[in-house]
Image 1 (cartoon, rainbow, N blue to C red):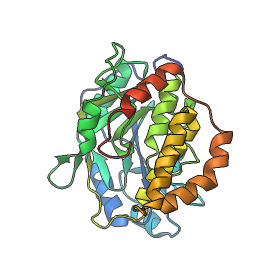
Image 2 (image 1 turned 45 degrees about the vertical axis):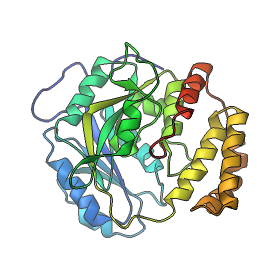
Image 3 (image 1 turned 60 degrees about the vertical axis):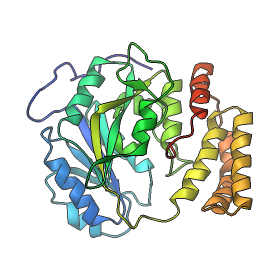
Length: 308
């Protein structure tokens, strides 16, 4: 990894537009929710450039957002890229830092400026995880408490609490760090994809920290898309196969097989999809360095509030 400060990050504007952070938004067939997010981003005092990655197969989203004042670029890949749409956006960004939003989430005023200040100040910091506030009342996502109670020891060259998990739509990355590890892994596509990225950043020497002074709003639709539980189950096993020692990976696989036998929600589909992707996972496998594996084992002892 490099710890050189990115060009153009020596000044920290306290008011007005902040030229250091781009917001990347991935979306698919949720125009109303997306427009609410874009309106919120357009109202931020930092006035961030916004790159939208449209994973839909129709022109509805394009027509809805093409003249929106927040959108500086609209990317329309030929197929649904899932979480990999974030990789496309980061490659197109021209700022040293990139914040992620989904089409049902946005950043609170001042958070992007504060994130950029921290990334300026701590050159080893590769990713900041923010506090996630859910719904109209802004209640704490359960993951906030899990991250705040991380058992990983504090590090003097990082702010906040060191972690190996985060919520994608409430995170800000150093563009250099994200690209250096390849971003989100194509084998996972979507669903609990954050853990593997955290592992890879840590293995490459970058720090990951939870900072509750930053916050993002998340207002998921009441009628969510089906199938997420199976994707998260699948990707938990695949992540273990890609990066963890075989005993850990085999235990994860056995737990999924038992869940499938018990007919738990999403488990049978997850097992089928895991087996289909297993040869590719083995071919791309390289285990974590000892210090990162040690951190991962500390976190294994704590049941997460939600899949990370």
